[in-house]
Image 1 (cartoon, rainbow, N blue to C red):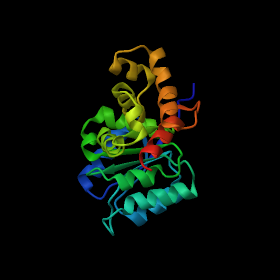
Image 2 (spheres, helix red, strand yellow):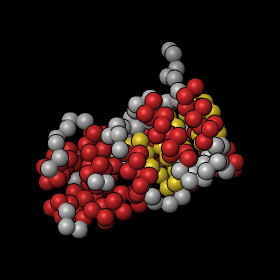
Image 3 (tube, rainbow, N blue to C red):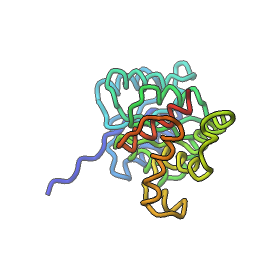
Image 4 (cartoon, rainbow, N blue to C red):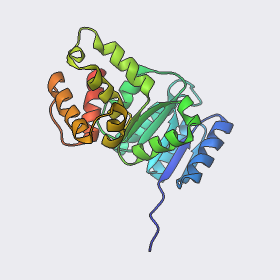
Length: 220
């Protein structure tokens, strides 16, 4: 029997020790490292020429040390729509989250670098993004929710529905959400419909599109 193909990943991080750690961690969890680069120009070249299954990218890369990594990834997504990208950032930057989500397609993630030290959580996030899903850091979501809750339709949501948004955007399965909320999976399945109706968002049968729609709403 032919073994399943390992997902090919490009890693972009300017700090050698962290880059090496990411490479070793991903390789140990059945990812094929297509390239490990340290600056924006190398990242752009790798994404264009190697066409990886997923890119793990530090927001701030040389030579500018501003948002070089993010902009390289966004350019690559415009040239190859849907390219899965997981960005890493030292701090929560709502603008970066907004830019990443702006095209409304899946395969996106935004994690704080602290999450990298939880190997299981980080690898799970890379896998979800590679599969076309979302992996948004809880702290990013909390800031988005806090920004939008006052005098907005979000006030129509119950605390349980707000928690449901956070868990969905983190990429949790219905089973995981049900366990966290201590409800049945059947009850969890009803959450998105209720949330969309209260926010006036169009319905969708696609779980990932529902998450992206809610996140886009939060960033308006």
